[in-house]
Length: 170
Image 1 (tube, helix red, strand yellow):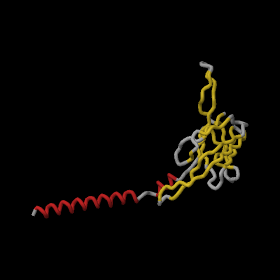
Image 2 (image 1 turned 90 degrees about the vertical axis):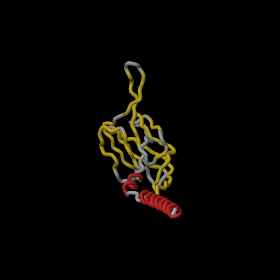
Image 3 (image 1 turned 180 degrees about the vertical axis):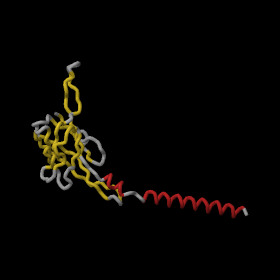
Image 4 (image 1 turned 30 degrees about the vertical axis):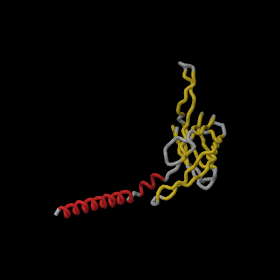
């Protein structure tokens, strides 16, 4: 009698372990399509900054630059990304996946500057369901200095995060 009870307990443990494993596999295997779409957008994030004179301390302080009018379009790409957008201090642009550099015409307050980003493209594997995405590493950045004073690389890894990659200074 005791052996039958022991055998039943062992069978129940095996059953619950098996059930737990099956449930775990089911939960992890059923990823939604929204997750794949959400993780695939790779944009370079650019913030605009300027130094302003603090009259009380007579020192310059770094602050965000809210551009009154901004237009941005890819050079060699027939599309306008931002068109006469008002009061903006952050933009997101897509780098070219098949080339090692991307050029953009950035117009701030009716003054044109050309932004050239030299980058290395990398394939990044997400999952079997989602496939791969193309991420980038910023090697260097060049900008004409008509309206813009300078540009600085803050985070050279361009991926699916919302981290700031470049700062453009007025």
